[in-house]
Length: 334
Image (cartoon, rainbow, N blue to C red; front, top):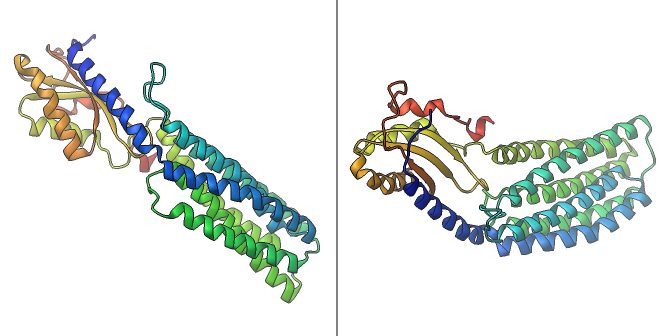
């Protein structure tokens, strides 16, 4: 059935939401984070050539794999840089939420790239184990040491003061950590080959690095995909929110048609229908609900619809009426 509601209250609240988003985008853009990611992209791309040359000369799969990883990383870090730049662009008539979600899209793509890279390293490592090739451990060792020092510097640059809820930065950090581990693996492989002559150590340690990359990529892909599918933020329980509104706000009879999601993983947005007990004072319900959502559930972006007429005897007006609407699973269960 078509449910009557107050268009005016919804319009006012939507305008508030739109304005609030416009300001938050500028705040979450992160000039400092963008600059750090940009520096990391340039340094990573520059050293990639040296590592690729070292890998070709020495015959080391670990160095070649790390060079390929660094090439992928340079592109991914550049993508993250673009994500920060776009996130600061204001909302407009065609993109009412702005570009803040591009950072999540960049994190999703970075995760997929990590998966593909890990699979390629495993494939090459298996081939090397079946057909071992000679490796010049000396060149391999010193190139890997330089790579390790560079990646430590980049990790310190990106990690300093970053927001742990920022998926874009987390994806960039994972790429740098993968490079760092690749350098460590190459150093270990060089030492083993130099002391024992066991060249299979090179592909074995490469597989170890690939496993770490895959383990890091899966959570990034899961979380970013959950956000892109507009899943509920972690720890958000729609039933708990509905029960709290009805129990603590005496002027509310029922809550239903609830949807909660996040744009970037760092914010929470909600839309809901509220049935007031008294239609004459119904408009006063909106600020009360909004205040509770903000103070108790940390939800600052709310679109509240008022249903000013009875919904009919076929609809239960208990708080659990909201269960008839799509209740998304929590982020942890996605």
